[in-house]
Length: 293
Picture (cartoon, helix red, strand yellow):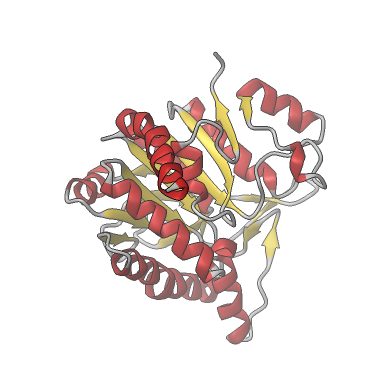
């Protein structure tokens, strides 16, 4: 009986959030590292199916870095990065497209459907939802570096994504844009996610990672900062609290809220159903970034 009452209490706590977000769009980005753990991935995708079933419109953007690096090494090609950006020559681009379009994206679609949801994979060979431009890299000394077929999203074909949502499906977007010459561009998934969220006028952007969120002390997970504004983020970066691999993720959140997304969240995808805990509970489990009040 106690367990049943606890379940009822959870549902009652979730109800006002379900009512508030019904019909609204939530963009969720899941990284390649999180997708390496099948249990974590299944829990996350089940949460996405739940959102869809209660009237929320989830859009999933995925990475695939570890899968791409493994495929490159199997092909005898060593991955090269410049300040976190994968150098993408013609051979690497072929591997990137093959892994994202033929392996990662279909696997996510199949898993969502196996869990009782509906999903549509969107990428350079299906819908071409992202239009991009070539991105010039920068070395540590500030000098320009040619990264090859690396790009950034300049516009989103929102009608393609909206059509999938209107049909009751979860759009699952690979981080590949179409360039002005019709060729594919390899894009940073965090950058794709914030741009998609902004152009869809999403209620929320949620980045699932393998860290709890922004920590005042990176060695102490109890030092989680649960709520922060754009101005506070700038100060945390200046103080060195936010650095390294956290910078592009936090930047994506800041860009999203600056572009009109109501809130952006960084949460730990290793926590079972962290997505639901962040959206449907009073306390949440990660860091939320908001515009200035």
